Length: 231
Image 1 (cartoon, rainbow, N blue to C red):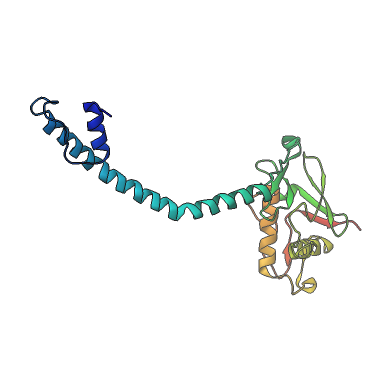
Image 2 (image 1 turned 30 degrees about the vertical axis):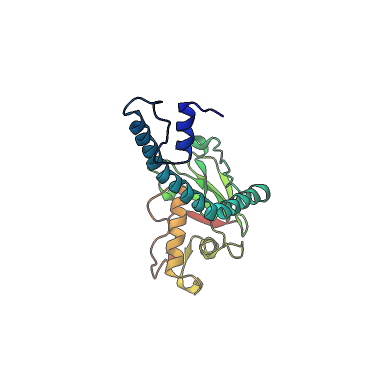
């Protein structure tokens, strides 16, 4: 079977031969050397590429099981688990300018109300009256009266869900006509309780000054606002 010159060259290049054996007289002078050079260049180029491909194949073979495992785990998570999203409850403010009432969300997720007093307000014009052990009526000159319980005002003990010591101190002062003297004092009320009560009331009403004065021998702890209870 006769072969053309091109077929002979391709056959020998495919076999990675560094020399070509062609019948004399088929190629012009210098053509044979050029073909040999091309064959050598092809071999030099293909050899490093072949080695790199083999290395890449080995590397993929070593990590393929891990990739398959990751893909399997992702599929399990998507099919069997739902990632919960935090639900944010919107607090709507109704007639806040007229009533001076605003809702806030505490860190303990208990929603409490605020009865914000006007600018330049004073404690002396505020009235808090205990209707029972858990509910008070709050009023201020020029504002609509509102009823709040201890939870609304942020005085709930998170462990028991009952009124905390700050609320108990506020109620004790109310039971004694707005002043808690030494004779009526309960040892469970400490300075920290009175301090925290002042801070809670200031935040609830939007005031800066303390509503309950420092202790005096004559007046004890006295509220600067009207603090009473229903008889």
